[in-house]
Amino acid sequence: MKVLTVVGARPQFVKAAPVSQALEYGHEEVLVHTGQHYDERLSEVFFDELSVRRPDHDLDVGSGPHGEQIGRMTAGVGECVREEEPDVVLVYGDTNSTLAGAIAAAQSPAALAHVEAGLRSGDRGMPEEVNRVLTDHASDLLFAPTRPAVDNLAAEGLAERAHDVGDVMYDALLRARNRALDRSTVLEDFGVAPGEYVLATVHRAANTDDPGRLSNVLEGLSRSPRPVVLPIHPRTRGRIEEHGLEDAVGDAVRLVEPVGYLDFVRLVDGAERVATDSGGVQKEAFLLATPCVTFRDRTEWVNTVECGWNELTGADADAIAAALDGRTNRPDRPDLFGDGEAAPKVVEALAAAV
Ligand code: UD1
Ligand code: UDP
Image 1: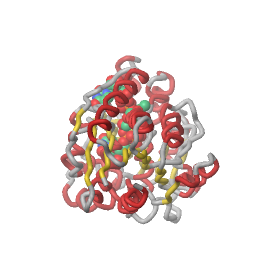
Image 2: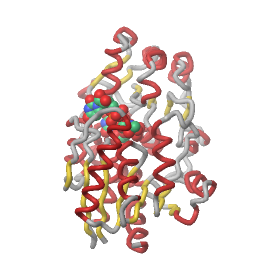
Image 3: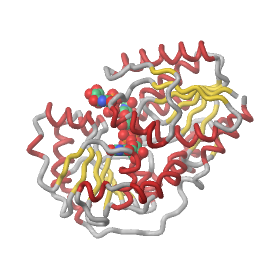
Image 4: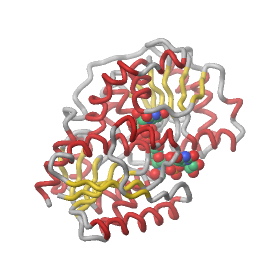
């Protein structure tokens, strides 16, 4: 089987790593990097740390308005598909790179497979939700990471294409966790002690493009009783400057550059609390038993909220401050994301289908 994998943004390098490794046994993989993320700290570092296959095609598309970015990525992936003639095009998650890969594959003889299918937040105002829905409906094989995702696919008439395999990010995390705990010195580097800091990230368009929401999130974090480490996405750094919000970052908040995956896993594992609007980070917090506060009105990872490990605050400064000040609830953790062996199941199902 020949698989053409499309990646382009930070979380996709993490998701593709275990699947690429599983494909090494008896299959051919071609990796296309769209170039949606290009900063060393958002791209190169993941290839180094996770031994992700190096890109065979680097499209170098970069940033830009959605339509333009998706258009250029679709054209580039389309050319690669024509040249490589894969059996399957494999896309991950919900970014513009995912949708571009899906459009290019749907117009080709190759089968299209979507890893992380079936997630729905119900918020069509988020570009990620639109990307998910369109990609799922264009795909031939849908790999759902959770039970609610399988149910969502069934509710949209896609049950026959769905495979309940678990979450490939869990595979990646299990492989990295011990290395991160053994090797990372990030806690010492940032001068924080285990269990005594909050790890925060914020980058989603809904929170960063709206100055009111961004200012509320920064204010809520600044009222934390514990130090907050905030590895800052370049989008957010840009918006803080553009909206003149430098003063909204209080003394409790330490802005640092984005960190590599191993340091990030160490930071999630050691935090008293995670506070984020990221999709992947909500999951990683749950899997590493760190309670999570999510600055969103809705989440696609509904089951982390239902079991009490994730609290939605929206972009409400008082709600964020109260959540960070509250007592930490640590209920039992059910198995929400499979058994950490999703990647071999994906490869097995692909090989059986083509
Ligand atoms: C994208 C995804 C989002 C995902 C996130 C992961 C879409 C619509 N959004 O958001 O779902 O959660 O990646 O991190 O696909 N920039 C840089 N350097 C880079 C990349 C981006 O400085 O290497 C800056 C540019 O100013 C750019 C802005 O960040 O305009 C936004 O980048 P973009 O790729 O459009 O979206 P993200 O916010 O990164
Ligand atoms: N991540 C990282 N360094 C950081 C921030 C995040 O390695 O400074 C990793 C994190 O462990 C997770 C992924 O990036 O695996 C999540 O990416 P992001 O939050 O950018 O995107 P989302 O999941 O929201 O699409």
